[in-house]
Image (cartoon, rainbow, N blue to C red; front, side):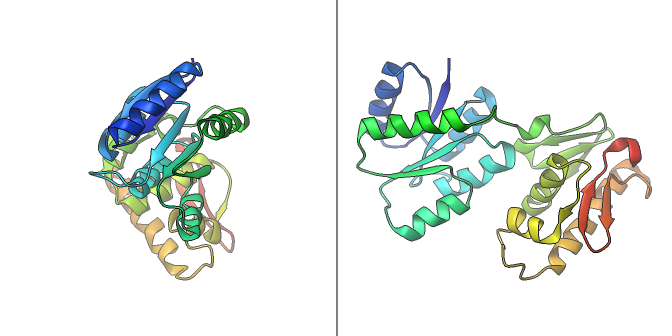
Amino acid sequence: MTRILVVEDDPDVAMALRILFTRAGYEVVPAADGREGLRRLFADSPDLMVLDVGLPELDGWQVLERTRDMTDLPVLLLTARGAESDRVRGLRGGADDYLPKPFGNEELLARVEALLRRASPARWAGASHDEALRLVPERRSAVWRGEEVRLSDIEYRLLQVLVRNRGRVVSTDQLLDQVWDDPHGIGRERVKFAVLRVRRKLQQAAGSLESDPLEAVRGLGYRYRGDQDA
């Protein structure tokens, strides 16, 4: 059965959504705040998330950002905010659709069905690894050759993007867009220094300067080679 994670703090709205989706044949996983939403996301591996923006603990923007660190499952933002700037922020932040409140039940179901129909099976960060490297999204860290490497949010997202594109060169502009949300390429030097920090941490964890799965490709960008070539 298709599983939908509903992250909504208003109990009346949450109940209405649960009834609506259950009657439509979906399994509903409820969460009343942002932190619980992330816990259920990791524990239950849903097929789609319906996410309210105005949440306690962590707001919807923070939940969306951390969700995109872990998985590419479809996310539909459901919120009372209908301003164009909020819609643009949500879509640029990785949401797949945006529906302002109040909404019609039939439109919501149609949007959910469309997202599920277009979606490929969700990829999860924990599955993006080889024998030597494993990403740990709930701790914002990586395990490299048996040693845990603590990373900042930026360093984690950087490594995640490179790992997902294993063997392929990711350009500096692509990294600025996907990691820093800087599509115009302002501050390109920060990519270089962030990669250097990640490489240094991986080398220190393995106790060897030669133990480095990342590669700088002159004039093009950076590549994750995997353990076999490190």
